[in-house]
Image (cartoon, rainbow over the protein chains, first blue to last red):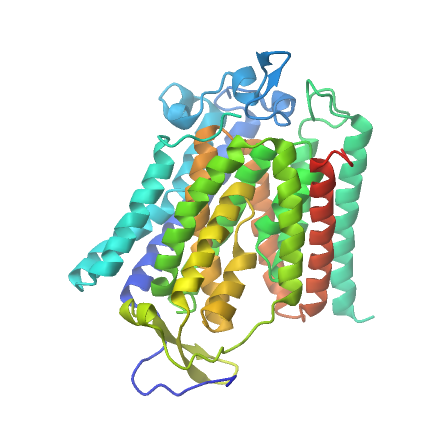
Amino acid sequence: MEGKAIKNPVATPGASIEQKRYGAILDIAMKVGLLVLVITFILYLVGFPKPYIPVEDVSSYWGLKLHSVVNGEEAGYLHVTGIEPGWAWATPDNLKKSDFLTFAPIAFLASVTVICYLSILPIFLKRKDYIYAALALTEVLVLVLAASGFLPSGGH
Amino acid sequence: MSKKRTLFFTVALILLMTIFVVGMVQAATGPTPANPGGSDSAIPWWGWPLILLIVTFLMGIMAVLGGVGGAVLYTPIIGGFFPFGMDFVRGAGLLVALSGSLAAGPGLLKKGLADLRLAIPVALIASTTAVMGAMVGLALSDAVIQTAMGLAILAIVVIMFLAKKSEYPDVQQADKLSTILRISGVYHEPSSDKDINWKIHRTIPGLIMFIGIGFMAGMFGLGAGWANVPVLNLVMGAPLKVSVATSKFLLATTDTSAAWMYLNAGAVVPMIVVPSIIGIMLGSLVGVKILAKTKPSAVRVIVLVMLIFAGLRALLKGTGVWK
């Protein structure tokens, strides 16, 4: 039977408490992240502070593969640019370079989901909704593991 | 031809022409094997990011009007016609999908359209397998990835073409697992001014399908909206609006795990990522305004044609037929 629209006598439409909290934190974090991303990118474009790779040279590298071997020698992007993978961009020295600085809001945007999940975890626990608390915690662990850099990522 | 339809075709034509010009320019300037897309190009360094911004802006409009996520258009088109390495394009594709989902999430959650109880188990499975997909994708050569992605895109076109949608799927009885997880809800449908009760069934088969969806999202950097909606709607029986909203919301989780893998691998180039995010988001804002005044069914055909074109391009590039 299609088109089943039921007047619900018990439940009422709208967001649950955890949805409202998740949405509120996501709203703020997303706006902050995007704003900082635009600001740091503008700084990168104007070269303040001095980037690791000058903007006019980036085009020499963006067509490369991450890893490649030419005539028996490594000629991939990471090797040619000398950029280290993982969290190397976040060292104090690298964060003084505007291109690496741009990674900070990107990493923040990629962390927003973890923040949101952690924010709703106490609601599930308080409600003794242990299944969803476990699911949310496991999700956080998966995302943290992916972010940790401990998992192998590439190398062909 | 009506004004609306003229607008659709104008945007589509501009996008296709831009892609065509990009392809021509790339072919003419000829990136060398030692320096692909590089400093010997006739285009100044800022030219490609600028073209990228324009193309992703138009893509953002088309994605909204066509009812698809940006990444499913972004990765094959940018990978096929721009001089960027596929590793960087897939990394950017995931971040584009992630940003779009983050931006849409608050509104969808607050309105109660995206459902957290439905999203959390699904997202856990998809994000875990997306990590695995990213690991595999980063370990494969560009040719293999392009070929596989071309085939995947063409399969997506078939799914999008054949999959019917159901506003309110008939779910006679919630299954055991969804009952235990208490996945059900109610939302207000303004068009009929009624509260819609919903529940789901076939939860286990649906969750199993998300193993594959997450893996493909991570491997190809495609996002996953194209598959999320049919599985949530047709397999699990969530209402269409709930399926679309929950799909959009859970992309943030699925793509976050895969995006981290690309970020940690070093496959993120800000000069590619930032113009793409800005372009798609601005385009999406314009697209939403146009959508309010238009019927998007005609645009869906254009999007399907673009996907066929992008899928064939990826397939032919991967197999070496059209370099």
